Length: 203
Image 1 (cartoon, rainbow, N blue to C red):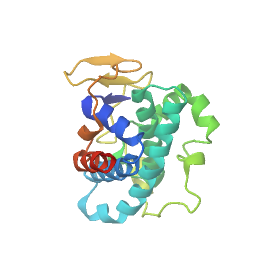
Image 2: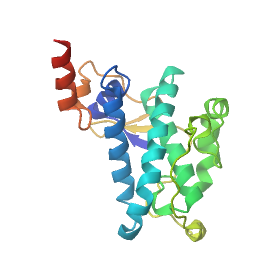
Image 3: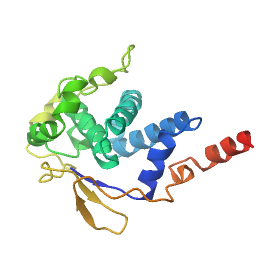
């Protein structure tokens, strides 16, 4: 899969895994991902999907942290969560929100097979062990969309590895870029005020 990785991604990783501000970072990142993917959907379908996506992305934040703890790079941990999302989108027939074509699912799954099997993640069960005990909200499906010959936002041809575009537009194949020393959690989306508040509380 082709993904981006810049200072904000590293800052988000550090915010999400930090004490005190981690929960705030989680909520900000969930909101951001929901808005990004709803932006690819028809306007009249967006609100009906919002609660489901909020719940789904909240669960994938746990996947992301678990992947980091398993020793996977930031890029690969994030790619795993995007693969989960694409499985879920396909199951719901939300093909306009998909980033990769369904015919590449097996290749993506095989690259992370050990991790996916450890947590029971599959196309049919995208969250596996990360599914909350009380589940996540349902949303209307559009199964007829799965029969479309092309998914307008899916990019094919990047199934054999993670392809990481850095902040300068250079492409790195594999683990991605090295973490910069200046990856301040305050630079994560929506986190500047939360970090300031946490620092004042500690002072």
